[in-house]
Image 1 (tube, rainbow, N blue to C red):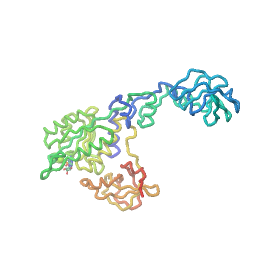
Image 2 (image 1 turned 45 degrees about the vertical axis):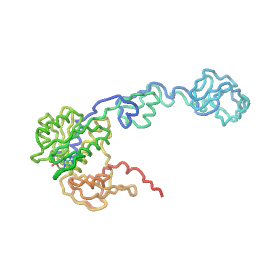
Image 3 (image 1 turned 180 degrees about the vertical axis):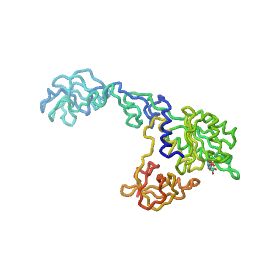
Length: 407
Ligand code: AMP
Ligand code: MG
């Protein structure tokens, strides 16, 4: 049996970014930059005024001097007329500094006259000027490969007129459920039948990673059906199968994968739930075979598939951070396997407190809904007391947000 750490190491060692595409700037949000973006020019592109006021020559501005206003430069206009000694150009924030001027006097530091102004304060060279290249110099790498595109990156790329941005492409993830008991959502289940909820749950999880789910359907518990649908699924960048991966005589996923040239890297991980998970490769195409119990399917996806999909889309931060948490009650488990315990996590005094969300059987889904985190209970332990420290994965990002109550 493969350990949790080895399983992840093997998976992440075998997958790599799927490819690069150029997309419109806003389509790049939340994705990873695939090349360095070098500033094509200086930013700001020219010296500009940081205030509404007057562009002047500081050497000719003794205190109390009266200057003649000779020009008017609103934002969006560039004036070629030099400011002469004893003169001033009315200038607005953002407008380029005209030739000759070396300082801006804010409006509120002047007293207006008739076509003139009087200086109320000392003027120093460079006052209220933002200089060309002060933010970014031409040729400087400003958004580097591997960066997550967020609003600041968008702002900078847009300011350099980047229309198309090179990002790692989204991966297309084929999702295939197996089982004679399954009917598709929309078909009323007959006796002994259940709705194929795993396909939809997996598609939701794939979407939340920023990848594209491709729903292949349901393979029935016979070889022909498995061969046909798994072949179809292998055309995607990644294939995820659900159920049929244990040791039952109708569990045909692994043998069908082998028949289609998928080389199994491991089967069975020393964890619970998710133990029967298999991982294989057909060329570069990873294949994850997850157990069918809905809670196990989702937990196995979270631990083994999500990090791989993120890596394939260029992310380097692909694992949930492990934080210390403290159990609020006693717990028992069988020794031998790492357990992912569904927990409800709260914050108290800066510490994470973790309470079991209830029945942790793989067939129980309710406790997945009640869980905003997973506690990783080590393989070698079987008893835990209230207050024991455990490793926690926080699954719900809103736990970092503050609740707001309208009174
Ligand atoms: P199996 O791995 O085929 O033995 O399935 C394990 C359990 O998961 C059984 O109770 C199945 O009915 C259930 N199951 C399998 N596939 C799905 C699915 N696509 N959606 C919901 N439950 C499933
Ligand atoms: Mg089955």
